Length: 254
Image (tube, rainbow, N blue to C red; front, side):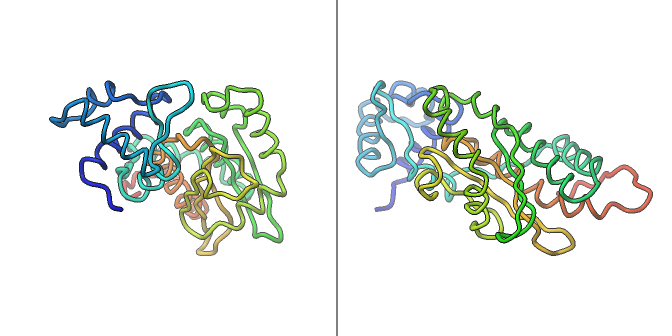
């Protein structure tokens, strides 16, 4: 069943607000955020319909509603706006990658650390294929800045997941080429519930070498994060093509 334009607008607003504030969204908050001439009663009815269709759910301790995995998938596929990195962000990424242009694994390891720092999520990078893969994880403690991991049980489950590197590496190696976004229950049972993984493969001299990405809560800034990951993946190849003699990169292409 296709959603109406009004339902899409309401759902997009709920998702955007929840990603920003990590608080269930109620009808009163939503009525203030929406630039639409509709009554609070109509908003409540629309939210109830979206819940019946599986796009929203009620947390046990709140009267507000939270997006489901189904809602995030619709958001990623159809609703989120493309994120354009600021010129300063682009220059920083290119500068950092090229400043650490040593052997490939060291450069990729630094790229993973930079990605974690920019996104404030746990990041990873792989070098090699499924038979012979090195996996680098960075920012494992940064994940605890997110309220989804405030409970001891949840934090323990996350650390156990990322600590099992062989299992995680095989999970990441099975991802398709290009940009992949797996949301919540779209991941295998080896990934803890409520987790999203964004992955982008990267190339060196035209050959696929590995993948770069982040692991975090389903409530993540998908547009911004995918923009950063894609840009970093493209520039890993460029990091190994710096002209002899160096120089300042001033191009604005990507």
